[in-house]
Amino acid sequence: MSIVNRIDRSAKVREHFHQAKWDEPVIYELSTPGERGILVPQASEEVASQVEGIGALPAGMKRKNRVNLPEISQNRVLRHYLRLSQQVLGADVNIEIGQGTCTMKYSPKVNEQLARGVQELHPLQDPSTVQGMLEIYYQTDRYMCEISGMDRFTFQPGGGSQGILAMASVIRAYFESRGEQRDEIITTLYSHPSDAAAPVMNGFKVIYLQPDPQTGLPSMETLKAAVSERTAAYIVANPEDTGVYNGQVQAFTAYVHEHGGLCAYDQANANGLLGVTRAREAGFDLCFFNLHKTFSSPHGCGGPACGATGVSQELVPFLPAPLVGFDGERYFLDYGFADKAFGVGKIRSFYGVAQVVLRAYAWIRSLGGEGLYQVAKTAVLNNNYLFKKMLEIPGIGAYYCDGNNQRVEQARYTMEKVYEETGVSTGDIQRRAMDFGLHYWTSHHPYYLPEPITLEPTETPSKADIDEYVETMKYIFSECRENPEVVKTAPHRSTVHQIDESGMDDPAKWAVTWKMYLKKYQ
Image: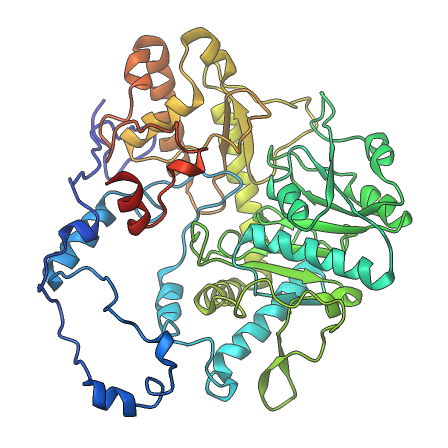
């Protein structure tokens, strides 16, 4: 099989791909004492004591020694980071289909240029100097409300899990203000794990609704058995991480409301729902979107990102402060809406990542209402085409295919038959895909479905892109039977070989800073 043809890319496999690989040390190991990329002027002690700011610092807060930064020339810094950039895969350099539930899609470069224009904003600037950015926040809030049916949004949460934390915090504050002792959160097994983890961080007990073996969805009877006078809220992703949509969701939210609970919607991935359905019409009181997923801002790998969290009018006083207000003449940071006794206060230090919100704003404005609806239609079409093609690969299946459960914007497959026949695991396939410059995702841990594959094409790839991805999967899965060892020992053409993951769950072995690494391992 030859290298992919630039004109006809369909049904080709990038068999000749090879990831750039540099034996590149961490930058501290490249440091040479006295080597400089730029000479920073140093103030004398006499001058420094007179400089406003420095002179005002208490003696105990002034550094005794210079900060320990690498000493390195400009060209070596450039080589270092460019080499690192060549050793990664991403949406700009490969067909990004394989990150189901976490959505990696193309971010228009014109939006990137816009975002660079605000990269030097400081969160402590006087509001009078950032009127333009505050207007962007305010207008994006209005767009999010229109898209979801909610009444106000905060952009303070720094990612999806923090967005769920914000919802759980608002729920807790709301019931505390009413003097109600509600300490249980209901979610489903196939909702994102953070839909349970974030409420636990707020002191809630979590009750899981188990899926029906045929549909993959919980029944109304299961929900009724879980709801009680202690139910604070029902927090759910819909469609769930399997890609299956619960068409009874409005009945579920109505039942929770009848018993005094709130309903919160995990809409981290709304690619298949834009312009089709809204959280408000489905009966939800709260929801959140990941701007770094659905709304095209790049995924920040934990930050920068934004879990834009919206609530109905009754819950607005409990949102973290501030929001952005407008009095007809100027935009301002509004603290006056908050319930001082019970409000959440803050989820993170400042209001939100300006560049992320600006990218989302630009994406929404460039598409308009009809464009957002087209995004949903294309995402659903792409996913169901991919679903059909993947199921044609021998040994690949999907649970809950009873004829009525069409997948929406993503799907979770299983390769358990391939594993049983060859001993090749889904983790092996994930590593082998790197040898073809592709990404492939398994599932959240623990695996609730055996040997899972979770793929989401979104609206970004063309039919030719999907065909190329599927052909590569066919090629790899044929290797499982013809030459399983080449898959089990992969990757062979990537930046690194297989790594020892035995310490991943042992905090005693973690070294998250260079200083900690030196302390533990050198």
